[in-house]
Image (cartoon, rainbow, N blue to C red; front, side, top):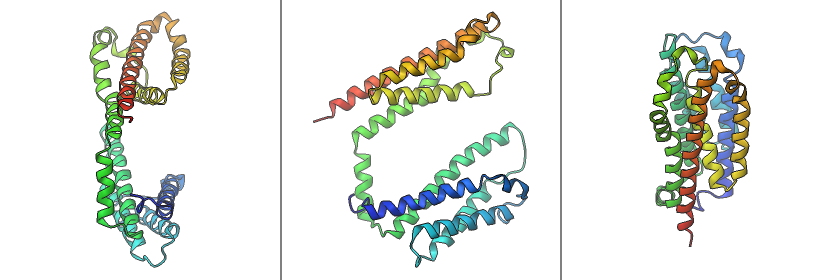
Length: 258
């Protein structure tokens, strides 16, 4: 493992990831909105962005003799971007774009990791040793499972518990952004779990106080009282579940200490 994650190898990896982040920032400038992207793979936008990514990652890598690097970056980036091309508008198209953006970033990361491994000449035995070490790390599995639980199953549990109150509210009463509550709940549970694991319960109190201040006006307004009470019930359930999972995870991690 030390042979892979030495200072020189990590420096190359950080340079490649930094170059990728710069490219992503460049590709989100308003300049690109004025260029047409009406073709799947041969649009000017995708070709230019692919060239920028290829040149910048090649320059930042510092491996001037690796001419294959910009070619692979250009071909793979242009190809992946082309896969996401789809005409249409509306909610279905927006969901498609969100899912594809997630897939695209994961694909970029895998490609960068593959190029990095080739540049620093990582052999299969070293890579196998790292993977074995990671997959056999019990603490890592406990932490990973804890975060998975607070993000996905916890949301389902809260939805089932609050279902009777949700039925009392007419759909017209909900004026918030679609799925905003879902993502806020996930983010707050991730924060709370992190605070518990790091033993910073004071930060949880600050989070509760901050959210209460934002909801104070709604509670005092009779028109929105039911909605505000429903939101607060869901919030308290979210906090309780995240804290309990955090306490259990912390206890399990302590049991593994020698």
